[in-house]
Structure formats: C-alpha cells, structure tokens
Length: 200
Ligand SMILES: [Zn+2]
Image 1 (tube, protein in one colour):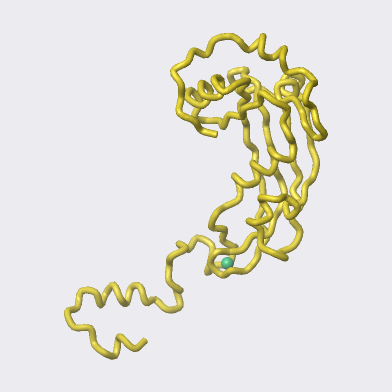
Image 2 (cartoon, protein in one colour):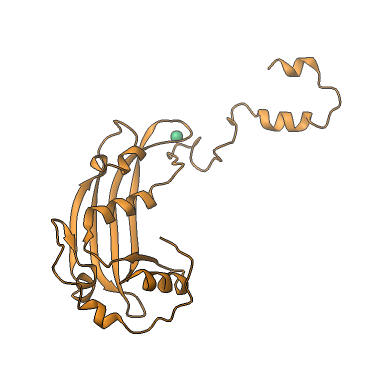
C-alpha cells in the first residue's frame, strides 16, 4: 500500500467526493468505510482463519482451533481524519520454525487505517503520515478481505513456540547441547586442525 509520494496539494475536494459514496455497487458484506467512520459504526464477528483462502497457508496444518474475533470500528485519528480501527483477538496454530511443532499463537492486534478517497489522497496521506497505513476506500470495502489482509500482516514469518530451547534463540543458532559453533570458532585460529576434531 505504500507508494511513492506525489507532490500534490492536500486540497479540499473531500466534501464533493463524499457525496459520491452512495449505495451503488453494494454487495453482501460490503460497507462504506467513510460512512462507518462518520457515524462511528462498528462491525464485528468471529472468523475461522483456517477457512481463509490466503491465511490458511500460514497455519500449522491440523494444529487446532483457529477462531479469531474481529472488530472494525469507524473512527477519526488524532487529527480528525476518517479512519478505521481494526482489532483482532484470538489464537491460531502456527508451526515453530525451530522445533517444527505446532503451537497456539496469540493474536492481539489493533491497527488504525486512514481512509483515502482516491489515488491522489492515498499518495498524499502516505507521504505525510508515517504512523498509519492508508486504505484506498473509494469503493465499498469487504470486511472479510480487510480482516484477512490484517491477519496476513500480523502473522510472524518465523514463528517460535515458547519452549525454552526455541523462544529467543536465533533461527540460525546451533543446538546449545552441542556447541559446535564456538568449538569451530576456536579452531579457526589454528593452522593445523587435529584429525580427531574432524570426526565429530
Ligand atoms: Zn519450538
């Protein structure tokens, strides 16, 4: 969503554009993001992440329940700009990238998305605001698409379970039970590595 900023003015075409956010093009599950922001409306529900076409690929197969409750609330940011606040709460099974076991990963995320009415406003908001993501909301938004997008952004690429041997250990680290890294580091300074060391 991040785009190169355009040197455009942030001029006031908002009022005219807002009037065009009509009811045309509505579909099931779709909503007008600006309208939701204006009336501080809320959409909420629970979704099984294992049934999400894109996010399911990131879960540990057969790892257990993957229900996440979600909430999309219309709001304003500190500067009064229309925004959506997206919350995710729940737990999904991920595969620990160190021990390769499934484990329940807690989801607790709250993200504020600024709303842009067109490509130009998207570029302007993106350029002047490093704190928030910006959503191009010039068409009805699909709640489930927003939730899945958010889910994909939140899921860690290299998840770790909380076992002592896994949590906090760099992914490339060697097994602490066999400290070969330090042994080899020590050997690196020696000209002639003894044969007995090579046959570990
Ligand atoms: Zn693990």
